[in-house]
Amino acid sequence: MMERAAEILRDVYGYRRFRPLQAEAIDATLTGRDSLILMPTGGGKSLCYQIPALLADGVALVVSPLIALMQDQVSALDLLGVSAAYLNSSLDPSAQREVVDRLRAGQLKLLYIAPERLLQAGTLNLLADLEVSLIAIDEAHCVSQWGHDFRQDYLGLNVLRDRFPGVPRMALTATADVRTRAEIVERLELAAPREFIGSFDRPNIRYTVQARGDARSQLRRFLAERRDEAGIVYCMTRRKVETTADWLADEGFTALPYHAGLSSSMRAEHQRRFLREDGVVIVATIAFGMGIDKPDVRFVAHLDLPKSIEGYYQETGRAGRDGEPAEAWMVYGLQDVVRLRQMVDDSEADEQHKRIERGKLDALLGWCEVTACRRRSLLAHFGEQRETDCGNCDVCLFPPKTWDATVAAQKLLSCVYRTGQRFGAVHVIDVLVGKTTAKTAQHGHEALSTFGIGADFDTGKWRSVIRQLLVRGFLKVDVERYGALVLTPDSRPLLRGEIELNLREDAAKPKRSRPSRRDATVAAGDQALWQALRECRKRIADENGVPPYVVFHDSTLLDMLDRRPATPAELLAVSGVGQTKLERYGEHFLAVLNAPAAAADPSASTANENPES
Ligand code: ADP
Ligand code: ZN
Image (tube, rainbow, N blue to C red; front, side, top):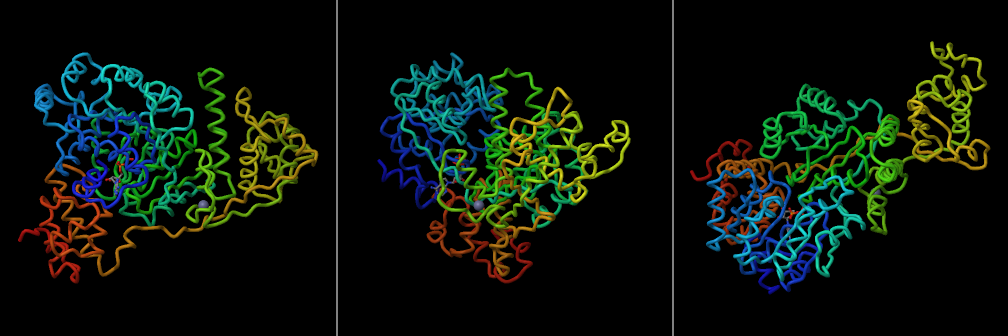
């Protein structure tokens, strides 16, 4: 069986070898075992159920909450020559009837289906009469009530065990800590599943966290070298999404807003443009992203902090699914710490939930301040030990300096104490640096012994100190006192000089990291051909009503540049070119590749508009 699986990998998908765990997961399903498959985004989960589906008799059910994605997935399979369809609420009755007819006639190898649809009595009865080869439950973490993607409908999926006895079930997800994993197995009632846990490392993503100064100019500097690249900019509020999108548009970017307050037609339109056009930047709240599997997102930028490391990992995981270099970039400052801590304390949730939320936030804040390899500590959070530094995060590339902040911290904590633990950062800093304001006068703070004792630092440096003391638990924000800074039990030993404290020095002006641009991997002399291949791909994509990457990934076009195939057989050797795509599009790409003008003449890209000629 596994030889046949390898054949399908080669002939249908055009790939030479399995990625880690794919072969094992396929084998488990083919031998009838239930399984839990945990792989990072872009790890190649779909093949784990598609290949067994193609090898077994009957139809495979793929349960997914992401209705918007089903159509693209089915079109992508269609381009590979695989017969698949989907059933969800977006289909009109006649289209649904057609799918049901094809099902009954045994014409489908894969059926994508929304959970609520699958669980309807009518659907279950229909399927009971058919041969079902396997059931893949995608985004399986949606069963977790602790997670941020909880879906009520997923809880009902345990009935599949009794409704389809003997049919192997696969639960797939890219997010699952140990607790969620156990929850998936339990709630879906998987029977002694084999567990395939992939590494969570995304080596092509470069992680960078900068202390927030003027966030817009920081973002401008970051984006300056990334014009024409697709990316996502996350903001916390709808309002900030809109102002940021407007500003980026003024700066000459194709930037589109996306948040839950926009009409659904506008959201759909912006998402569509993001998928279909090159170089669109989406500015969004976290409402955007679930189920976006555009593989060539080159950067994810956070202007505000997410709520947890899990959230951060998931959001940044949308970058670089194609394995090409990508950036996860974030600015972060004192304001985030204060605001997020307050949000957790203010929320309506019960104490148990609040405690969990607080723990998650603290883990993320601590990670922002790390002075060792970011990737190592990110992976450690997911229980993965990595032996070496990564060389591809800001800490590895530009090791931060630390400084002895013991005395500074003592000054600050005394000042908080002397002013009665009733004020926020702005006022405390005014007193420290000895700045006279209406408030210092009103409260008589100019007479305090701490007035002006911190004049040797500027406001920015003090904010950095406060931020880090908050993160490390030497200070806290009191919601009852409207966000005043107050001391904690840990403050005392520090004030008394019983412990020393080293803090991270915020880079005054963050160095510009050499962007790992993909275009740079295309040699100057190949640019014309590269553009011509992209145009050829775009035209085919438009004709088929699919995004360009569904036709071929960038990595496939890059491989064509490398190999310069001249015949169909040579084209077949390119990674990502399988039999069906060769038959359908081979000619077009060979015409582009073999056009004499393409290699030399920069105007070739227009000359190649019509490769048939
Ligand atoms: P996931 O669902 O885990 O996020 P996908 O299944 O969408 O990931 O796969 C990500 C990309 O990697 C897809 O474009 C897929 O075609 C490609 N891919 C999967 N398996 C392989 C493989 N063995 N070799 C090369 N590319 C692969
Ligand atoms: Zn590193």
